[in-house]
Image (cartoon, rainbow over all chains, first blue to last red; front, side, top):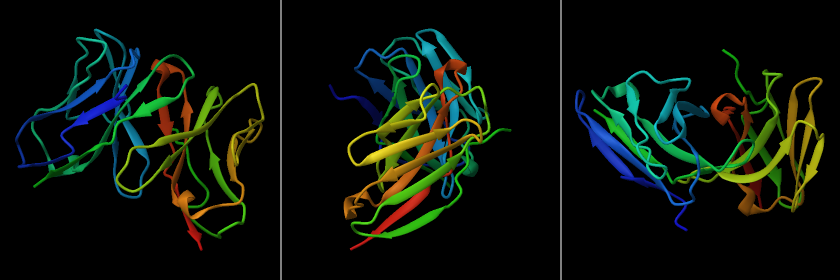
Length: 112
Length: 112
């Protein structure tokens, strides 16, 4: 099993550009989520999904969209990138309620 | 909003000593907690978890203590090694969507 795979690892965007951060897991986990991590702060929840076709907002959802058309994939879309979205983004998946979350290696995004 | 917070942002210990990292949480409805370790440039890695019906759980060289009365978690690392140097996060599962909310982290440095 590859676990949770995120692509790309690094990305530089210009303000106003759009892009999609990819996340895929091969563990057949129902729950998936996206976090951002800023310097000196912990991980903050952006959006999450409890299964294919179901998504919901986390703590900091503004500026981001998600969809979950399959169990395996949970892409995160930035429609119009802003410098405030410069961060490291982590995708995670969880098998079930009250079980550990497995994380990808992260995508470092810089918006200039 | 409610946050999971840490008492100490940094901790330095001598190799071989024991380390204690603390965490406060504020949501009394949270019933599952995890400690994660994050090394530079990597995603968080699971260390140990505990459910709210327990007050102590031990792993290999690590122990987690949960005090629900004061909403406090601690991670104890025995015989700390240089490889333990990392940022440690506590995370609480607030049940909504089975998602985790993270504290700001404690940076542990082990002095050889």
